Amino acid sequence: MFNFKSKPLATDNIKDIAVRMRQEMYRKQLSATTAYILAIPLGILGLHKFYMRRPASGFFYLFPAIFFGYMYKILFSPWASVDLNWTFIGAFAIFGFIEMLNIGRLIRDIYTISVRIDHANERIRENIVHKHSNL
Image 1 (cartoon, rainbow, N blue to C red):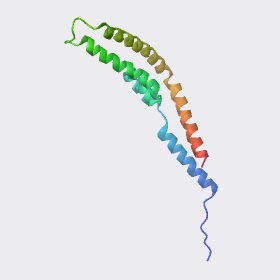
Image 2: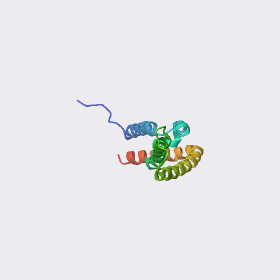
Image 3: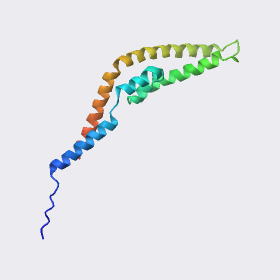
Image 4: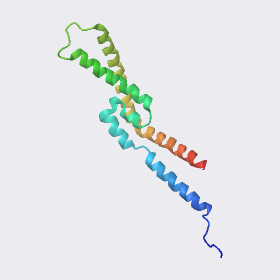
């Protein structure tokens, strides 16, 4: 007896790979809308940088903001002594300056988010194509 079941053609395999690639790209691609939503109210914390897969840049936003807030709480709390330690005031001023620089970077980021998202999505596409080209 002959088995008349057809073997899968190479085009079927290519279609399956294309579908998987498209699904993976859809899952991994970044949204400019989400980046704007993170950048405008929470940008000083650098959450938009973490979303855009730039954790080092996000850390440079997050660390001064946390330290600046901590120093503000120490210096201006109701139970703070009148005789403040000048080391804390100097650190507060330095991190305040860094925070002002971050605000400037945040304004630049808001204007360039869409371009940066496009570049990030292009890198994601390249990685997916490279991964599936080795199959």
